[in-house]
Image (cartoon, rainbow, N blue to C red; front, side):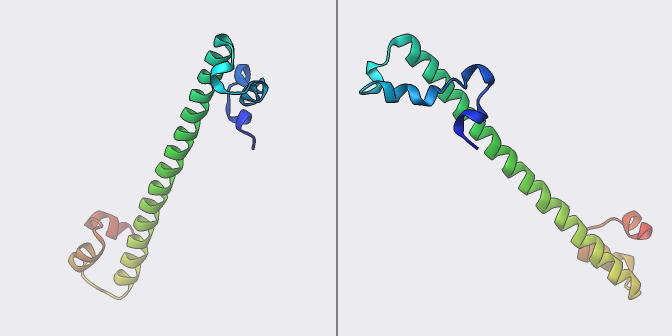
Length: 101
């Protein structure tokens, strides 16, 4: 995926190549520089948003995995005839949740 692919369509006109046409950033005409700055800001914002969503997804995946592990453990303990109170203490599940297993 190219950097421009993450930008809104109106900013995908090779904006990151603008600087190649000039010896340095401050040689770029003000109008093009403003457009470049805006595109760069949006690009960075997009990357930050994607990173944040990935992190949220990982955290949610961990929570789901932990819950599944609790349920699996509770099923095994219940099948062994362990008391609901002990299963609750071991897994953190409620008595109602254990009853439904």
